[in-house]
Length: 436
Image (cartoon, rainbow, N blue to C red; front, side, top):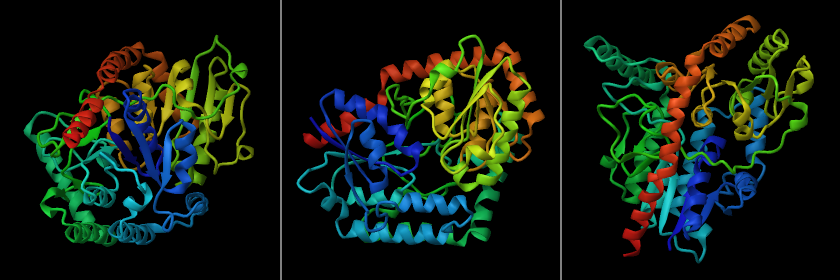
């Protein structure tokens, strides 16, 4: 049996997307180990998975909480601080940080977050095979699929193709003109690859986010949810949605919820309540006010750790908590109001829950576009969210059974892929090739 080492990014989305695959591999007799910054140890170990710390010189214990607290107060490290940590991480990797962290253990295979290509290069440098995995759909240049920040739904005609090409051209132009530090990080990745002997030709720089390594790459999502691609990234494998039904995310006083009223769940993920605490608070209050006008519904609102519950006026039919066990809530929910994070969208689909999506940044507009395209919900505006607006969007989805039927059809597809688990097959195949 193989020793499989996961190296996720510290985002909750990156961590959570791996747990189902890790459990399946362990159940099949493989040794599964996580390498991560010290601040993610508790979350990984809470799932009963083995963990070893890495990059502690760059991310000492408490660094992530400190960073989040500062961002919640509007004092972000910015891209310059991000680049500083990337360079420090690359230096450690060149000095054998992975080998030091593993000690006497030998990895037969690494699974590395595609959001950190420099870590993927460092893992490749050890000589073991590497699979990258994405906690979002990939947004690399494709003449048929727009950048996910546009929230555009592609069509089949020449006009749609022209719009998509223009959207990519605009994306790349803005990167050159308005994001010089980001381009510098691209150059840092290229220089690091050259120093490690990784072929620069095997890196895709025509991307909306960070460079993609042309290695086998798992996207934890059936292709049915994505838009059809004409130029899929090299090595892309669509896999099971990787929904870990046994994931542990805290508890909820279920006795305060009733079985005779539809449950509306509202959450904006783990990043937005940090980066946009003031605006998020206003949107949370808009939801609470909308629910106050709908006493025939009940709600669960997850506000994160950086928004004070005391700042909100909460009606009696809504339960407010910093964190909630999302999968357990979705099993009972009739609707989710979400930011459109990839994991949340997948989990809604898996449990057959229609959505109102309020996208803000990164992949969220593209995810929302796919939700609308497949009839799984509606897209609202985070910037213009008000009690009346949220109420209209929620009423629209709750009042039209077609949304429920569409999401249930997609749910059947997701369950089928979860059962077949092609990601497990790819990992075992590559690990077997190594052992032989």
